[in-house]
Length: 279
Image 1: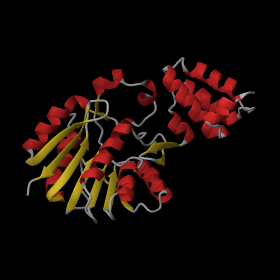
Image 2 (image 1 turned 180 degrees about the vertical axis):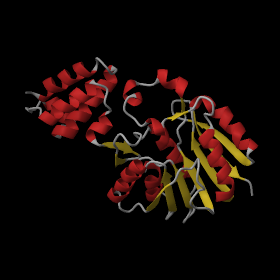
Image 3 (image 1 turned 60 degrees about the horizontal axis):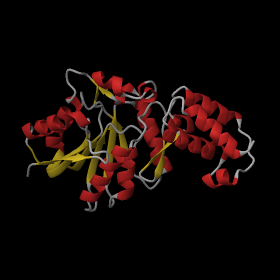
């Protein structure tokens, strides 16, 4: 079969569930991952036969299964990270949060804690991009920690201490910190109706959802415990629900944080908050 014909067929099938642009991107991703096909190969219309693994993958995509779980990896900040259904798929918005932390913290040897680490994409990236940091990462899920440790082994220059911890019930395992960062669960139950089925049906709800009655629970607990765990002048960085920016700001003010900045992501949505523990 000619590659162009194969690409057009997959693109047609995937448009039944995805937008034309997303269907095109997914088709390219599948062909590259399973057959090593590049865009130039499609333009040159090379001869290529689909494999059974490729056919199974396209069938899974047609059922809404995320391509990152099919291939077993997701890109993040220019690197690849192992993912499976026990961890969230890394998002572009989280890349923006990481970029902000790197840009604002150039000192050598900073002590960092990542809470709710999931795949480990945040602490591993910080370990590789910052100047000789000391990084700890925690998660309530043992399965997620297993994935994070696998990713740290893959990016072997990234030194991260991974610890099992339920931040809602336990004290933070480290203190005298320069930075606490967290991308905690922040999607309210009422917002499920706006979510794509491939996220709702396949990604871990433990890492996604909070109760309607207390959607700021993680921010409140982390910020409260952060007051004693952070050094004077230490910084708190959160990824947030775009609808709750003002509420998170007010919470941090009530807990005595200073220099609070609410930042928008590239889609012009409130997505990041930075706050400083008072001196």
